[in-house]
Image (cartoon, rainbow, N blue to C red):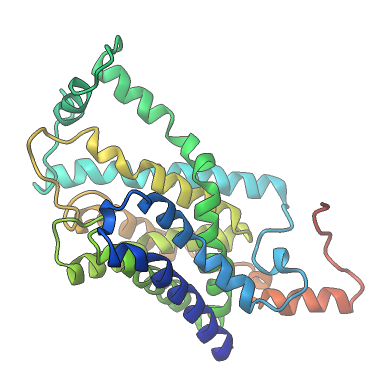
Length: 311
């Protein structure tokens, strides 16, 4: 267990730093290939999981298969998308009420400023464009699924189940902290927290990942599949930029304090996690607490090898 964990962390963290190295040696986030590097970095946890997972049925061990019970899987997938988008959006009025998010929920002045700089004439009103942006947010769960699955195969697909012998809540807490620290190569360059010192940005990222990771972990455990967590993660990333729609023109947004990234945005996720704990929602089914590799081996010994996808 400890050896596999050490190898997993070494590969995931080592590859992420290696891929980000050209940014550190160049112009950082200003490099034109930054988006490509960022997507490549997101694949490193999946690579690490595939390296350390010894089961011949990796798709089962990592929570990719089986896709059943279908109703439960689809239910948690939809719930994950809705909850993720809701957590991102509700952080904005909370931040505005606490005075840390400079909001303009009426005129959308910051967004209007962006529209005014566009060369094309836009016939729709600003409010209609904002509504359209919000309506298309669920599509982000599909568009962003591949890169976020790269992360979730590692964090919630492999790591979380391997930490479960420590207890459900310690496993979720530890995996969340690890997930946050893994972002260091980009966070220390100013990603997500451009106006904060590197150490503060990383510390804030760890806090956010611990809370949001608890929600993703809950989806993984209850659905007994990595897909709802991956879709939730994809929707979460897709909704992240919505704070630009409702910001006040000319005002700086401090993401260590405002949006879902900052402390004010953690209030609602913290309440949600507290409710999930109080209602026993983190009590995963017994078979979910087993090592997936051991469960697969047991099924094979019993002549009940799980069905695998074809092709």
